[in-house]
Image 1 (tube, rainbow, N blue to C red):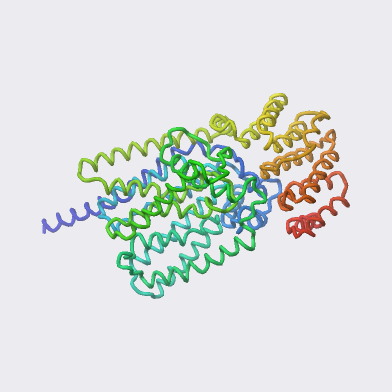
Image 2 (cartoon, helix red, strand yellow):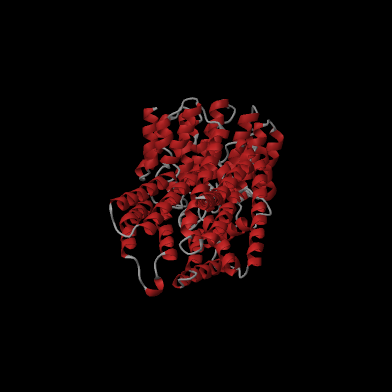
Length: 600
């Protein structure tokens, strides 16, 4: 009896020891990550935060418009915007701290999902003892990495956080189907439906989730199918075709043809330049993730050098590096013993298929690595583990991993401090990227807010002189400066808009016009000759349309504000004439604007 009781107690202790060994690491990671980023939660809304959340920031809040009329992404990111609407509904306003702490909460849930997913995935190929050591290391590297920490602190990137949450959920459900079900039955059909539903939620959070089928295939080929014997599980393949391949094909056709998703009219570069530059960007991402010794701000990398030709050392070297990595990873799938090592490499590149290939997006943003970076850290840890040959080396690897995680944690904490105020963000960004037009424009805007007319004009003039080809946003910002801080606009400043107007940075041009118009309406800056500004721009726009030097679509982004100015000064007939000219060219945005004006 005594020995039986002793055995029972021993089994109970062992059971609880096993449970604590499983749960304790992730609990420590969650608490540590919260402490590291806490200071950054007090930071401001910046950059894309304000235009995307505009429906929720005014005195009158329209939940329907904020959720269903968001223009960020082809599907509107309905799920993401609904969570922001919920933030507002609970607190009655948009408080930056509450928005960011919601982001942190989602990030912590993602950490839990990643921990569980990797645990279940790696047990397929590795002993449980090794898995219990490797998974916390990978999860810590991913959670503490400053590239991913910025995604949490950049409020509007809740879209990326939610997309990753639902993608990880879908991967977990798929993995459960493949590991524990040998035949199709009702419970399997429910899980297949759940996988599809999670994918839909991920797509409605952010469209980069379109790559989920590729991630599913990576799981299938790296952990299940025996490619060496050329055997592909028919049930798994059928599951993929029905659940993912058909919808993904329809979505792709919709994006490319119906929405003109390859239209570069609103970008200051061509598709060739993007294709030549993105391989360099992908390798730069890797450098930033793996060697975070010099902290940077990922949203002010608009100064990233554009590769205008393929035949240069940087582009060719980047293409070859990526091609070699992918070739080795794909060939390694034939080796049943170590093919799981290919998973991390394939996940990184598959995760970038939408945001870092041919589509007309900005060249560089750190938050694009939030999901793909899982593959980076997983590959490094698994590769080092595979190279370890004895106990001493394993212990050394664990110590090195702790030091590496500590480095990431330290950098993330410094990052949180910088993100705690708008001034520190701009100062840090300007120190690292003095050539960034975006950060220079925002610095001028901050000087204006603080009432420094002369300093803001000096910096604005320096921008115009330093970047004459990209200076149109800075020239327009001059209107904003005087509207905010002066009671006159020197006549010679109108000469800035005479002659050729370069719109190489169309989004910044639109932003500058929007800021000026907002200021003009609020300050009633009658001393600015708005009719003269309109005439100068309209003359240039009409010349461009006649000569076909610029596309009608790109010119609309400027003419839209000229039309709005015409309405402001009471020239309604001329405004409607210009609108009808754009409608006649097939511009649906102009038709929507007419409807908006009439309803207003």
